[in-house]
Length: 540
Image 1 (spheres, rainbow, N blue to C red):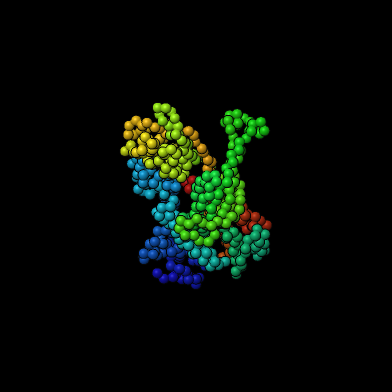
Image 2: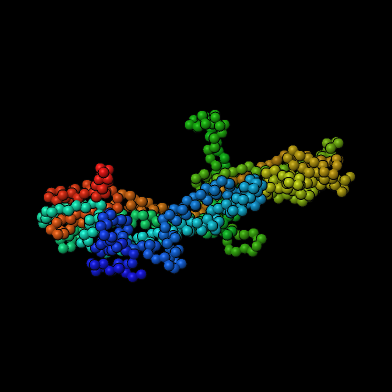
């Protein structure tokens, strides 16, 4: 595949349709009067020239706009499918169990196809990467030859090039003063005017041609920022529950930061004081005014052995409220929710026949003891504890989680007259004696609750790329939407003045501008050949 040398002397890459310098059609057919396709200046695009090697085929595949559009459509479809069922991050059970249990065969298929963790799956990231590759190759395949063609264009253009422009006209009258006037008007209209042998090339707005490619750069950076979120440590969005009085490690910080919840505060509007919310309070009963957690942020000092209590250094105290997060070293801790959680339950050991109590026990639901000694030979042992009790498919007691939402116990009651003990299963509103009727029972006395603050720990190191990509994308949109590339050729040929013009859009504006440029001259306005052709067809 050799380069093609034009009669003007310019050497063009193989596959060039229009000579980059003079605009001559290099493979013009006889009597061909069709208007020129000026989209890429007739430049040689690699995808339309080479198709032999494996690399050529990959390049040609990704350089296709249709391929890029289909990749985007496929990505949108699978993204939509990912919203049908909850993603893995929003469920509490193992995904292989949850989806089959909750949604049957459809949930099992959903899990097997990888939709449970769609946005972190390798094939979804591959789709995003393919879109990025398509954008890069599409841009390079077009912008490089377009830039070379525009840079190489000469003032004096071939006759065939001028005749086959959409706006073209011939004037028999030549007056040097008219050419000077046109040149003056063009400069007043902020055209960059080049002159060669009495011919003029006026050009402005060339930068608008790069708008779509700047769009592509912005999209590529945006996609890059999105993919950064899947790299560990770049994007963190984790839930954290901390009970009042407790200290918990901040997730995804490698155990470097800890947060202590000193107090959770819930405030409501008072309809007697806050008249603005009186109607809402009357309708809803209560309207929350403030969710607040008074916390202390700590940082671990030095390194600790596994299981060793870390040494903590106090960093700051803060009152976290909704939309007022605690921020430190790129991490932000937001107040997102709260709940009231059972903290302890109190029971009594009672003789069922006499109703006599032989002592009380208080069970810490977060750290229950194995045995509670009530004195005088009376004690209670916890044989099994189910913080979040339910029966499984086989009818056996089990727990859904470690959170004491629905606590249940298997107690053994040991008394002087029953040294081997009696067994009872105790749950909320349930008292079961599995081995026959007991002499003693465990009676419920009371419950203590504790507030638990719900936080969201967030860190986004990819945000700069997403914002930068969005800004660059909008610059490209504005650049391509509000400006256009206009060129006007005024040339002397065969004792005549030929005028031709081209723009990448807004032909009406270009024709109006030509009328302004030719005012105060005796030269006629060039015709819109496409419009004339359409009128002739309709007339026929």
